Image (cartoon, rainbow, N blue to C red; front, side, top):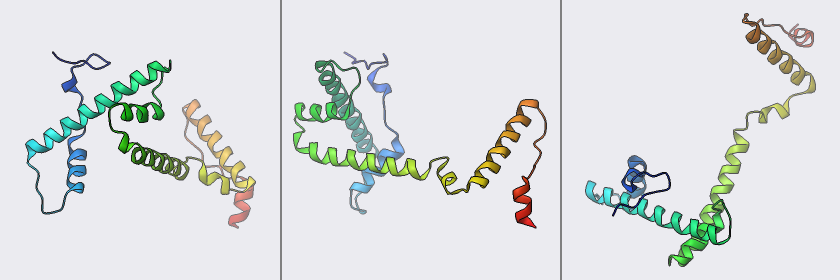
Length: 156
């Protein structure tokens, strides 16, 4: 009796990155404790099974609410249904922390974040340079490094 996941692959095909899981396992234990490879594999399988269980229950909660997308609140409700209610607060706190970190990372790495610090003249010069590069690519020609007059006067 082989359970199948949503995409039709055998459950054994689903796994977690071994190196990442090994790192997590080692971080949770004192430095002098070693874990046998079989024990690591078993822990990874337990994690996969736990994820499958919570995902399945979250889907049921989602369906009962006549929703098509599993939301974080569905996962939290599923944890309660499965008897993991004592972890809901900690899971929610981790989720909030993740959201905060993700938002901060996206703001730090925003492609145009440094553009807000440009003057209007610098932004115009950058725009003209980008248009010239795009025209050159479209025409199959070389990109000419044409400096606007305002920039040349700054260099003098």
